[in-house]
Image: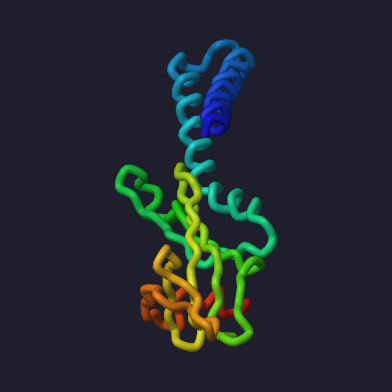
Length: 173
């Protein structure tokens, strides 16, 4: 966040310097208000660029084996350009490389899911996924594994086959 602030300030300084150079080249014929307006527009443009490229930059740094399962595209009133092109403000990823399965229950997997949000810390949650039963459950203190390897004591939620978490985990499981 701090580095983006610094980059935005330097974009404004750079734009002001360009306007000043053009003013010098033109012999001082440019209006005086052009320098602060140019700096402000450059700072707004840098901020918009940073907001739209956050998702791509973050996904590029994900470790191998972590796959994006779902994204959330936002449209916000105070960012009117997002109605033309929505921006990704958060996403969910599944650690498919670290997914665990029990040979006695081949349709059930345990995976860590991660929640990324713009300007928010990353949160993780272990989840049990039942590919055959089309259900999933967050693993909390009450959850345990039975003698047959099945997850017991979990609060299962039925989900459609198109559920992004289920689809991502089951495609790799």
